[in-house]
Structures are given as structure tokens and as C-alpha cells.
Amino acid sequence: MKCKKLISAFFLLFTIPFFAQVYTEKIVGEKNQELKDSLKVADYPYALPIWGDKVAKKGYKLPYSAGLSLNYFWQDSEIVISNLQVGFNNGPMYNLDEIVRFDKSSVEAGALTIRPDIWLLPFLNIYGIFGKSNPSTKINAGIYIPDADNNWSEIANFSTKANFSATTFGFGMTPTIGIGGGWLALDMNMAWTDVSALDKPAFSYVFGPRLGKTFKLPKPDQNIALWVGGFRVHIAGNTNGNINLSDVIDLSTAQAKVDSGLTKVSENQGKVDAWWSGLTPAEQKSPANIAKHNTANRALESAGNLLTTLDGALSTASSSSVQYSLQKRPKDMWNFIIGSQYQLNKHIMFRVEAGFLGTRTQALGGIQYRFGL
Image 1 (cartoon, one colour):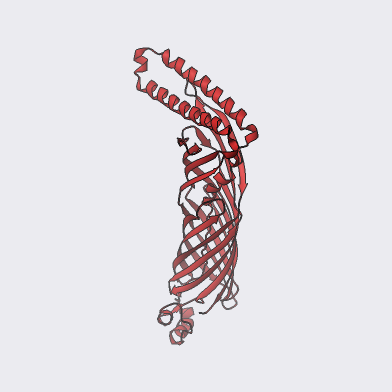
Image 2 (cartoon, rainbow, N blue to C red; image 1 turned 180 degrees about the vertical axis):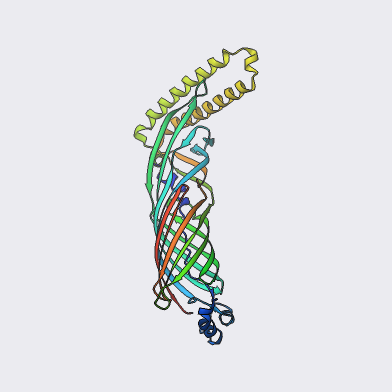
């Protein structure tokens, strides 16, 4: 199958973290008393953050109030698809959850992003998100039906990979605070990703708590920060669409697959009917046998209706359409994060981060430039 437009819906599982490790730090310790005293008497020279002058005079060291980051981000995430419904030529929609099984479907993508930010308040950073990405989606699925012994077998399958281009835009905020080099940041952002194959941009929400420590280096304003944390993704999961039949299936092999599938459905229906007829009246009243019989009939009816309707649509394939509805989500909402940042001076920082555990793997590298505003 060539499900390019349909599986573009599954691309929505690609999400981007935008956390940058700078923070307002409470200066503590006798060895830092001179710095603390200088902050209390010096005039704070910038308009942002709001109340920056008051906070500095209380012994807090503030970063430059504005910044611009350039990041490259890569991610590979397994996805779960459910409540799949398909119809043809605006006819009845068939729920295929019971008969369609997906195997290790995933989204892989690389993205280049720009992140402008400002410190609105001494402990609150806000930022914008602008990015371009090239995601690809891998889908492996099969149609399964049961027999009289409730053994399910595959009657058709497809495996496909599609590549896309996308644009991401959004905004976020990071409440954060540091004391004596240790710090806590709670990054959260909302983003919309515009894919040409979708009717409207896809929405995602990311929450990334991080706990870290900054270590000073011998040269002034140079340091290395290390952190651990988590990465949680929420995706708006409902997707609906209408596409041409020729964009969904390979027309050169579709008819043979439909004919074979209908034959297998008919054979298995005969086996189920023969099994049921061979039961005694008492056995037919057994709750286990009733459930087994109903499940088999329901699945075979769904497969038969789908294949019969598709068979009719293939007769006018050039003008036939497919309507679909589905829900998708990451297989795991959380994964673990480790990261580090090297600060060359108060203006320039270099950052790397990796995410793993669960079914999502990711990596990020970036450079940040900060200035007063």
C-alpha cells in the first residue's frame, strides 16, 4: 500500500523539546560573599525581567534577559493507533479495531529549530518556537480473522514508509530557580505542526521537568551544567480525512488481495457455522461458547463488509475515495532525559541532550546566544 496521506496523520507523534539551561541563581556561601555584595549595590541595567533590579539587590544573579537558540533535534518514537474506521465513497464507516493489527509502527524525524526567548520575570522564561522538519512514518499492519477454534490468522497485510516536510510553530514557558549552583526547571510548551498532507496543523503539548547542577570553571563566567529529567508528550489524538483510493492502495495488486481475502472469510465463516451447529443445545447456552461465537461472527462480518465494499470501489478506482477516522498516541508518554551544557561566557552556550528508556529515543544539540534587553 502507498498510504502516504493517510499515515501522515501518524506523524503527529513527533514533538520537540525547547528547554534551555539558564536560570536566576541565589548566591550563597562565604566564598561568594563579595559577588553577593556587589549585586546588592550595582544598578541593574536592563528593562527585563520585570522586578529584575529588586531581585538582584536581594543577592540573585540573573542571566542576560534575552536569547536566541539554534537547535537540531532527532527523535524515533513508537506509536499506537486505535479506533480506526474506514469507509469508501462516502458510504458506511467500518470500525476495524478488531480485525486490523499494527506491528511496531513508528515516527522518525529530524528538525532544525529557532527559539527566541526572554525572561519576563526573574523566575519565568517565555519563548517562541519556529522549526522545519523532515519526518518519516513507518507502518506495518495486517487484517486478521478467526476460525472455529478462535485462532486468528492474517488474510492481508501492508508495510509502508512515507516521508514528509513540516513546519512547527508555538510557544512555551519555563519556571525555574537555582540556589548555590543547583537548579530546578519545569519546561512546558504548546506547538502546532503544519504538514501539507493534513487539513489543519497538529497540536502537541510537552512537559519536561529537569533537575541539575552547574559547576564553575576556572575562567570567569565559564561553567558546565549537568542534568537529569523527564520528557512527557501529549498529542491531540483524533484525526479524520478523505483521500483518493489510488493514494491508499496499490491498484495493481489490490484486486487479487481482495479476492483472496473474501475467499478466506467465506471459508472461516463456514468453519464457525459448522462448529456452532455441532454443539449441543446445552453447549450453545454456555457463556464462553456464546462469546466465542459472537466474536467470530462480528470479526468475520467486519472483514467481509470491508472487503466487499472495497471490491465495489475498485471497479471505479480512478474516481473512488476513502474516508477514515482514527486515534493515535505515543506508546509511552514518558522517557528519561540526561543533558549537559558548556557555557563559554554569559553570551554563548553549547548544549547536548539525550532521551531514552521506553519506546522513544531522542537526541539534541544546540547553540545559544544571550544578550541584555
